[in-house]
Image 1 (tube, rainbow, N blue to C red):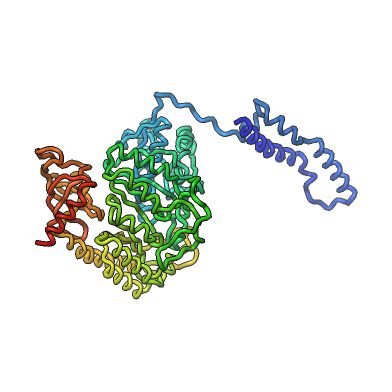
Image 2: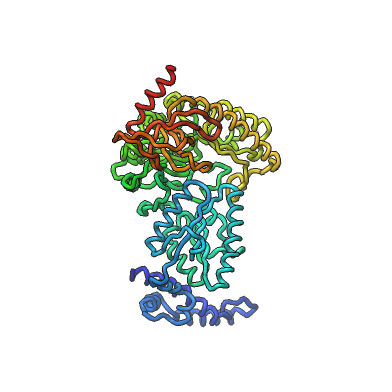
Length: 585
């Protein structure tokens, strides 16, 4: 530490001295019409004075002084952080917006702050600090945050009048993208921390409590928070981040600019977290990443870095060169699924390019890996896909869908679609509608395009589809999706589905809800069921696996009757037998 501090003070000293000497000898640096003789005389005088000034050894001696000059200390030393006593323990309140990665980011930030002495509260009225974990993917998400900030600012002013201070912080993607506007222009927040700066939160908040505005939005090429154990608070399901950032550079997407380049968390760290969750009774884990199936751990010593690059789905390409070596997603998925046979494994959000056959065969063979794949298409038009820089055509995408369904019969597919992208014609839109009909997704996420600053589209393309056209096309997409999803889900009537119970249904206290293997919501009446271990009946509770016979379906959910308690390891054969009996009838 002494070396580091000496070096810092040395640099500060270099910055301190020249301005004073430059001011003292300002006349020698000015341009004038003096004669050559006068100019040479002044130059000689300047060199003499300069040679008598401070040299390198002077700076070394100055850096070792325990008491720097007062003016230097005032200008350059970092502020002393105020000491917190037990009576100063502060409570933090989180609000999380956007994707599952933001849920995981909240858990990471809370883990860091808890070690820093903070308490967490679920009541805004008790909070000393409010932290909003934000999303920048779409304009609507950002506008939600702006509106919330105005409400919190009004609360902050009200609290100030009562001599009760409140600090407001922005975390995540919006922090990185809009730092200047949030901190300096609008002055609505006290703290800003980007996705790679959560370790710095205790320091930033200490500065804020000292009356300063503080920010850190630096992106990292290495940060994965591998040594930070997130504090999960989502019951019997949990998210586990396995990689951060994205290298795909799709023209519409701001993620590479708000979350940085791809880097993968070491395998040992992921397995440690999954084991911990299993010990806590978690029944379902979702592996997370912006491009989750491009996972590539290069930290393991035994990995051969010179091995062949990653294999892509047939007909797909990337904007970057093939990455050599490292432990791939299929190996990670294999190892994670072996931790606990009674724990469901999901993953999101993948890119269609990263589905080689070995991943698909593993999903089919391993009983606790859910037979559900998110396959973001974004558009059904090859021309628009090229403009989006997605790296595939409509034909290549459909070939992948066919291959997935061949290897994993009965697989549930979900997708993302953007309508009204730059230059999208009515013909392009019709091709997207036809793709929805041809594939038949169980679940869909559909959005009208909103241009984001920093993206390729922002710099190179025109957002030329009128808002009213975008809205009309979005409504048509939603209508077709619901029509096709209802058809797909109706085929499940009469089948028996393994359901992980989440809790009480939102619409009725007499009903329970959960999700099946395909991630579809399943609703069923609450009742006691025969126990697996005794001759008695026991109530159904959150975290239980139950078999549910499906009696009706729509585009959003399934309904049925619970048959029995079960476990993940026992359910597959029972489910198969019951479905065989139903088919025979």
